[in-house]
Amino acid sequence: MITTFLTLALIFIIYLWIVSWINYYNKLDNRLGSSIWRWSYDYPVLGKRDISVLDDKKFIILRRKKNKIITYMYLVVFLGFLVLMSFVSQILLIIQS
Image (cartoon, rainbow, N blue to C red; front, side, top):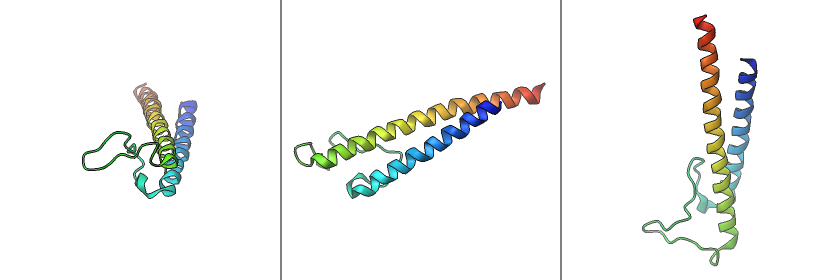
């Protein structure tokens, strides 16, 4: 149970580190927005013109980096959920016995 708790704490620290990277990328360019949960769109959005690599190469590279780190964040959140469920089941087994 202690190892599960330590794993959960480590996952939370990794999550905070990833969120700080997302906030860093958001501050580099205003066009990325301020959301940490949304990917920047790489597809045409109705009413907005999508920027291609030919238009603004630095922005596209930055947007792809931000999208990659958001994908890692979702992976860490999912992994944290699995570890949390394991931790809760261990606590319930202790309570039950």
